[in-house]
Length: 289
Image (cartoon, rainbow, N blue to C red; front, side, top):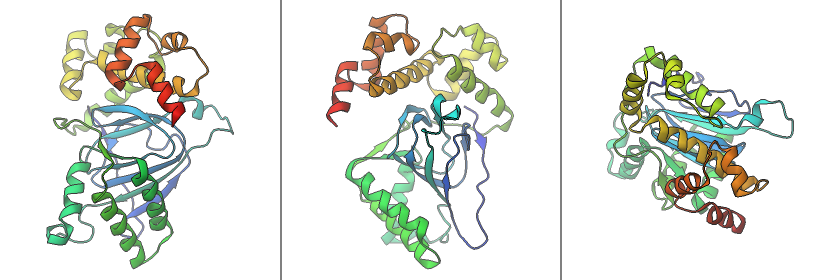
């Protein structure tokens, strides 16, 4: 897929960037950058794309995205409708792998951090007790200044490098190139898919959005993502179904159709295939947690 190259600004007084975002539109496109990104979601939820991985994200999630790994967080539609009861809030830290010098990651003492950066090229979700610990460490980075700011970042990365509850997101074989000419094409595919996944999307229809004939579109999409458009669309629909399950306002049969499936058996099969659980098990585990 063709992500958008994003230039990450840094202040003249800082060697890396720390910011708080409260706008659902910010970086709301498929993009990548040379800097490593560490993001914590305080408030807000939606669909997360990291490499070829598609899953729900929610408040409390912390993700480490390696250098040049395409990613995209799309908040749910409700956050774009001006509802004052729904807030978006994240802390985002960007830094270069070598901002502390070319030789730093060659030191024997930093071997764990170098390994962490290699894993981060697939994207890392931090969960459980480690995630709770990271929240405090990230806040320490945000509030620190001068040398203490760099020390706080090193402390955070050291904790991540030794953490046990880390989940790698993108597949080992995921690869991408950076031809800038197709930014608009892939983002048009994303926008149309999110706007219409509750209905049937015909191949001719999405191919036309991409400016391709159906056969060419299928080859294009599979070569860029490692999955068919049908698989991609199914993952979006199951992600939406997970949200509806957590909201617990609809019956499972109702949310099947609300998520864009017109066959309950098909929905049940795909839900289990993607999540590893039945809808009933998924809901039960969420309520128990």
